[in-house]
Length: 162
Image (cartoon, rainbow, N blue to C red; front, side, top):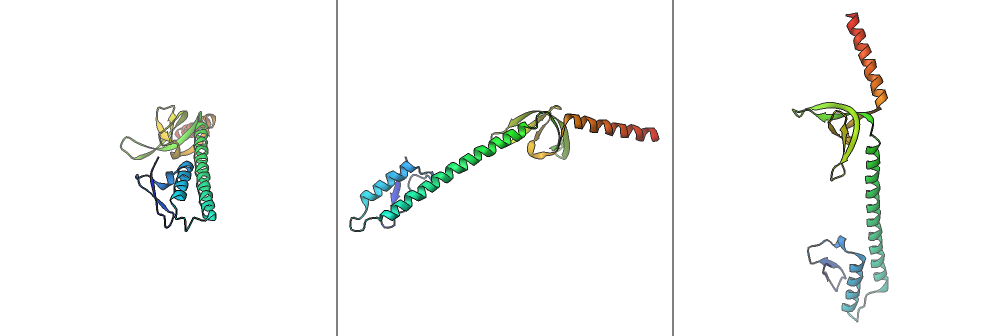
């Protein structure tokens, strides 16, 4: 547990062990409150309303911390689900060529990896890896096949006309 100094004139505290006041748990706060009550000036005791306000503030901080944690977990689950939804889809994405220039990378998503920071990396059937954030187009494999076939037919017609 961290140790905190309490200014008896203002009732404020400051961390002594280099930790952040924001990392203080409710148990730490209650221990601090009891210590403050023991050390207070008997001729100028703390007001009950001030203590209730402090406890209320700590509860608000705890609830905000829990809400943030829940939202972070929900966001991570949503990213995982969205990336998993790309499995079997044909994607086009901006990738990097060997010389470092931007190039269009395409293929069917065969797997998804997640970096330690939660970044989704798509594995394509071509063996290439692309960041999910760099995807510019998504199609079913059937749509991609039809688009490729239609493009080949147009190329064949152009060649025949020449």
